[in-house]
Every structure is written in C-alpha cells, then in structure tokens.
Image 1 (cartoon, helix red, strand yellow):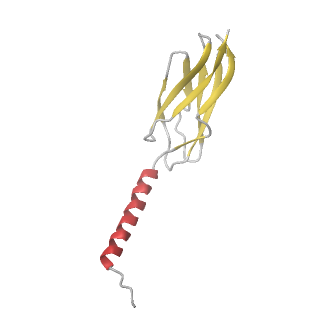
Image 2 (spheres, one colour):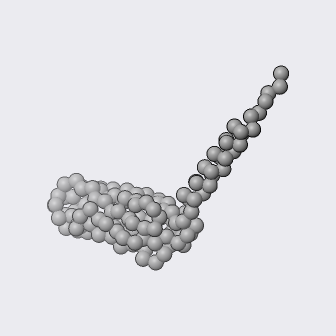
Length: 130
C-alpha cells in the first residue's frame, strides 16, 4: 500500500515554518539586555547611611543599546547608568543608591527604559536598623 503525500498540506506546513522563523528573526533584531542579576539583597543596613549596588548587563543584540530613562520607585532611591551607547557584546551598568530614612524592611524598584522594546525592573531590598 502506497502513502500519498498531499502537496497542498505539505506546502502550507512549509510556509508556516518559514514565516515563524522570519518572525522570530525580526523579534531578535536590535539591542537586547542580558542582565547578570536583576535583584540585590543588601541584608541589614543602617538608617541614614547610603548603600550602593552596581547591576551589570551585556548587550546580546546586534545593534547599539541606549538607556534613555531611569525611573525609581521613591526619592530615597537614585541611579546612575551607562550614558554612552553599549555596543553589541559589550557591558553596561546601572548603579543604584538607596538611602533609608525609615527603619524596617524595604523593597525598591528601578525601571530601565531603553531602545530594546522592553522595560527591565531592577529590585533592591533589605532591612533598615536605627
């Protein structure tokens, strides 16, 4: 008994595969963040004494990555960042400073806007003692 391959079905399947590869390729184009870590726990810190953490990333894309804006969740958190473009394969940073005015547990976020099409959220946390 011979099996018959239906050419229209085979052609449709092939077109679907090709278009999905094309779509994935388009989505991967441009700059792309690859963070080493997106959270940092300071542990126990002292009230009124600023603490710092440097988050680093690599540009895993195929175009220069530019950070365009940083938004912190409160005035007690600030950030400095790579202001020059980060070339493909190179590393960049976001240096977060937290200065606690209140005691107790804290969790603060930093939104990183860039030309990547997504907005990574970095988080610092810990506990403040007097």
